[in-house]
Image (cartoon, rainbow, N blue to C red; front, side, top):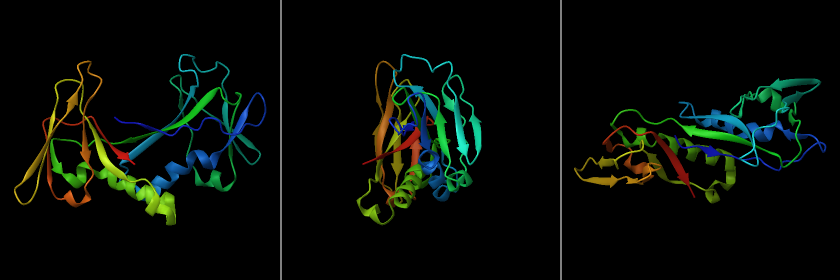
Amino acid sequence: MAVLALLLAGVGHAAETSREVPYKDLVRIPLMMETVDNDHVFSGEFSVASVDAKQPLPADLRVEVLVGDEAIPVRVDSDGRLRLPVRQAWVDAGAKLRINQPKGKLLLGYNFRARPPSGTRMRYSQFAESAAVMERGIKAEAGWLSFAAPKPHALDVRFRPGPAQELEIRFADGTSKRWRAVADAGGGYNGIELPWKPEWGDAEVILSEPVGGVMPLVK
């Protein structure tokens, strides 16, 4: 599945040996998506990693949410997954995330995924549902500046590594369009950049095999 990482490196720190990040900045995107993604097309999870990708997480890493007089521990899995709850009440209370590491040592991220459509035949509107949700999210985030905000323009369609796959769109007037995936010999990529066209909503998408992921491309 495609992943959109929203890196939050370099946010202000509280002291030489720790830093505090406004909680509202971390949960802004997932809270906003709750208002526009009623069908839960997208899912996400927080992560933490060393700036130097070759280095493991510090053995003494400790993360906690400061809410009022409470310091609530946040679990960090061995793979860097940060089990940070998303709560509007904590935003309203002015909560902060405290990390017992100096600024510039770690990266915080929010890994954003769209569920892949199932099967090999479906309407284009179902296949491209993630683009429609992302478009609503961008408009909600940008507000009155949405006319100048980036917009989805295509879908990054990924198949499992292997032979190049095909995608066909059949329209109501009997015409059709075909795309063949670009597949590299090393098996690292097998995908299609499919145009995002809301007006194709009722057309039928036919796949040579189920996709592994579909993620909107924005510009």
